[in-house]
Length: 89
Image 1 (cartoon, rainbow, N blue to C red):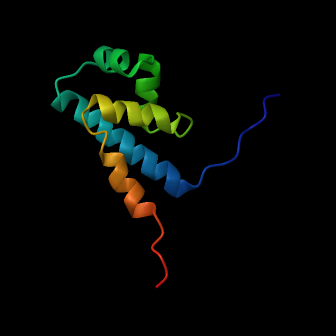
Image 2: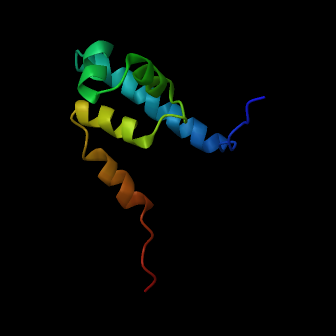
């Protein structure tokens, strides 16, 4: 029998689903096919489909490569800045 991995928090699943949906909508706005995006990101179309569904099993690096293909590679820095703890003064 196959072991199950750790359960994800529902909030994380919603966030990745939301990100995947945004990426799915961004692709046709840029007039890019799934084949072209997957070639440029150097992974399979199946992985791209998983990303667009917000699959939490896909590595963060794959999500970042899609952002780079869409010309949004700097957007992860905004997310990082929001997550960085503020110093106690």
